[in-house]
Amino acid sequence: MTKADSILIIEDDPGISRMLQVLLDSEGYAVAVARSGGVGLSLARANNPDLILLDLGLPDCNGTDLLVRGDVLAQIPVIVVTARGQEDEKVRALDAGADDYVVKPFGSAELLARIRAALRRRSRPEERPPKRYSWQGLVLDCASRTVSVDGEEVHLTPHEYDLLAVLVDNRGKALTHHAIQRQVWGCVSTGNFQTLRVTMASLRRKIKDCPSHPRFIRTEVGVGYRFLGE
Ligand code: CA
Image 1 (tube, rainbow, N blue to C red):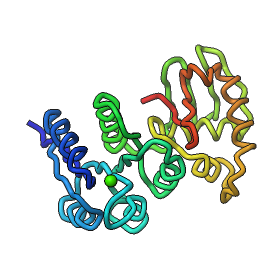
Image 2 (cartoon, rainbow, N blue to C red; image 1 turned 60 degrees about the horizontal axis):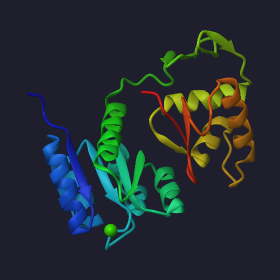
Image 3 (cartoon, rainbow, N blue to C red; image 1 turned 180 degrees about the vertical axis):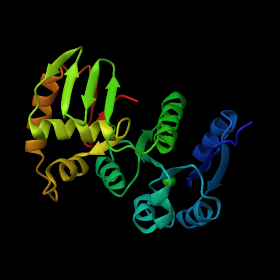
């Protein structure tokens, strides 16, 4: 039997942490729980877990502060757990290095899917960006910078191509507007994402993706975008 993936839960609410512990135990993960940011950071350093579930509202700190301060957390995939309506918190946490987020109250199936996706990304061989990526009719060839959808070549501008490549490179992961702007346009964000939105609309039109029923790119409301492929 291979070693179980280990998950550290940093959550002060006893009800939620117990529920998470039972759920993750039953899925075969090795689970540890910390009730404060300080203890969480010590356990992360001592045990080097495969993944961390991080509550943002902790008694001794904000979860995002841990991401900023905690060198060790940079090496471990982190899924933050936020309350509904905390869009700014989500964005701050993702920009500080969190991999993903779930919003309370979340369903078990959704959480487990996010965990599996984050663990999969972690074990994916480093090839950035992939030389050739293919998913559900979309093919992106990095050597020739060409894209086709359902067998037809799509003519993208350099920024549209870069935007798609950044999303594909981070597939499965929620990327903030800031992070995308930095990677595609190379500029420090001013909080004006109009150019990104216009480029995204044009890209979606060309790859025949519908924002309300996305096949490739999902809008994460108030946060950014996520490429849906594996
Ligand atoms: Ca809390």
